[in-house]
Length: 246
Length: 246
DNA sequence: CGAACTCTTGACTAGTGTCAAATTTTGTGG
DNA sequence: CCACAAAATTTGACACTAGTCAAGAGTTCG
Image (cartoon, rainbow over all chains, first blue to last red):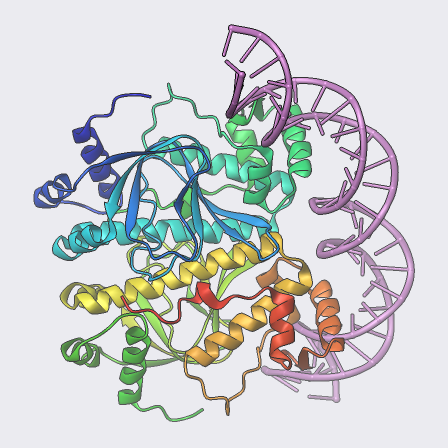
């Protein structure tokens, strides 16, 4: 566990939102007035729970999280991954009831912001509101791409696509290459992200490793041959909307 | 082709947004000042095209449309259906490049609104902006549900779920029961909405009809036994966020 | 009226799922 | 820090859902 500087957290929020929409000095100043109360979540604990009224929105400082939905019979589907620098609850901020869960994938450090405070900020600083709106739209675009991925690509391509996305998004979020770019998911979680069973995920990973495009560790996967993976994945980063300017 | 009254169109926009968020008299007045220029689209013509910068946002007055994405190899996945009363391009309104297409499913009558005008309206009338934001969030919730549908339900349930959603949304949009509640899609389009092949869609429809839960016409499907269908579908309308109050 | 889509069906195939058991890794309480 | 229990991985054998191919019939639309 690392010591985290509160001013760094504000900087991180500002750069996360500024990547979505241009912010002026007053906008940045307003963000700096947000109350920062760091909170720790253990792996697999809930940040959001289906059916609840969202009162707080987490800003991810360290660690990963994922959105998921469940079938009545208990089958699970992940909808997206949340990386450091993401506002986790922009999907619910204006809805009266959450339609899905968000759970910590790893140990997570996050700031819990009252939804009312974020709404007020969006109202008083329109640029910030627009930035939050855009961040939510970008995530909706990820949902659509995952729909295409699960609906129309075969198992190998799906897996390759997921890895490409993770890799590019980490880079875009400014996680230094020195830090690990391994995807720390179990094969069951990967299966739920791809509409596959854990057993088949295992077979696919083995095959991708034999082709030399990935390297596997325990409970994690790393990209080895990016171009090869990208070709298998049919990956086009357009849907991530990384270079946004209002 | 029916004659459409412009004031009716404004009413339709107002009620569409008011279903998402409370609007006061001035908000409604502001919406009434929007320029209304009715435009007709033939079935399968594009309202939005991937890669383009969105300059205009359509408001659907009559007819249906769908969002779709394509794989490099040309495979298609639908992401959602658009019904009368939907603002089609809320997903792109603040993005610089569209990541998907929107095409007319049937003959469509729509109002084309300049994106700049909508952005200005969102800025000057915060309630209206919030309503648009919420409409976009609700659609994102549909993407997530479709992800669960395709990823974790079998073909019969997927089809049943799609029909349940269509039925409930039509009702919520206030389409009178007198008008047809048939889903006017080809089996190939249904397949692309469900991650199936057209051939398998045919088999599934046959089976559902034999169970007496649907009735098929040419190029259309109608719900016959709603409770039966709902049971097959594992359908819970929560994700549609129909009763929203800011 | 004909060409081009759709739909339907059957026969066959292939990609994933299911089940089960051995092995390795991880996490926890003493 | 160890020992054990629980969780995750790996593999093989087999089953089954959904895909592919093909051909005939029905529809739609210019």
